[in-house]
Image 1 (spheres, helix red, strand yellow):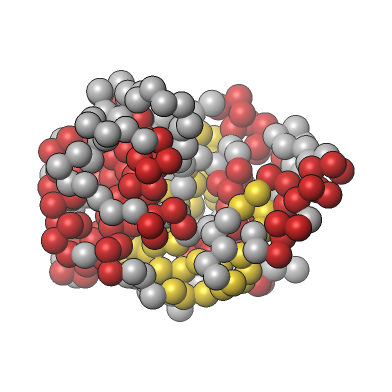
Image 2 (image 1 turned 135 degrees about the vertical axis):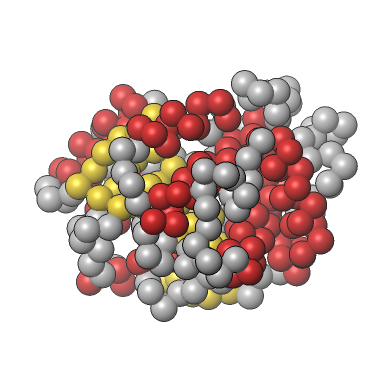
Length: 312
């Protein structure tokens, strides 16, 4: 039994991006147990339907919907938000992410580097488009899923999209750092506006497929995989456990905006606990400059969008 098994969220609606696979799937599964309506956001709706089927096999009473969501295509987001079909949203989990390994720099539909576009810019714009729905729900939450990889990275504000020196692993870590900077800055601005929405930053630690239980037909862990992964279980955990910090940030009403949560053991595995963010994750000047650039690149601002008034 996990810590969140007793939390109820009946009548509430949560959106999880990237919920058809990996950690996002388990976030959706855990939240479904709470009685909330969970909207599964994913690029491939066929895969999203499989995820919904897998969740219902374990949680027959689950309230679930799937919506197609391509965060790399900024022009598609307004229609995606309309397709949610809800007037209010109690929480959005900004989980979807792209991790590329090839040496060729790939671009989004709008010409942005693909990892920066998906992991950061798409979520930045999504929050702006969701603002009216988040404002309509009392004490709503924006949960930004960062990464342990962000600890060792620093943003190059003059080369946010890795145009001059593209290294996939570094670009990924910087895109996740950008997300975390945004999450902390969003909470500061929400507080200044007197909004009831809270912005919370989390990271899942180190998650391996070999330590993750099967969820057919989405994912089947073989006996060989399980045995190979056992030694790593000393310092890492499966994606089902990696979801715990995220789920707690959604459900635990004692967690407040501006906090960082992650796994307890070296930040890599274990039960959720509150962490002290490193200084480069909360730097006000870097975050303000990143916000300005992100707004210019996306054409929206989560707190200035005319169609998204903030409660004062």
